[in-house]
Image 1: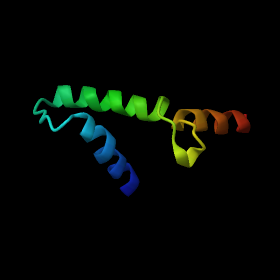
Image 2 (image 1 turned 90 degrees about the horizontal axis):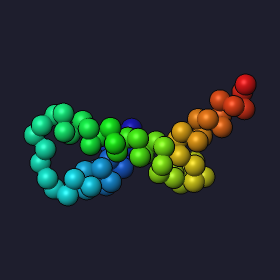
Image 3 (image 1 turned 135 degrees about the vertical axis):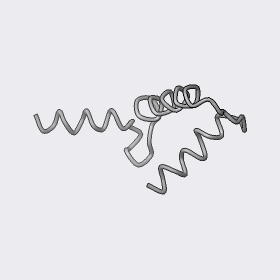
Length: 64
């Protein structure tokens, strides 16, 4: 959990560039886009360069 918070702080919140978003709908839209990027496009060192989606797909196909 701590790593997730750190990555959010380092990458998601820094992407906002210090802009305060007081509209929950706008903030949630940006957060959803970040989560999509994080899970489907961003390579993860702990997963050997795979995205979480690629790893999940690999694991579920191996069990089928």
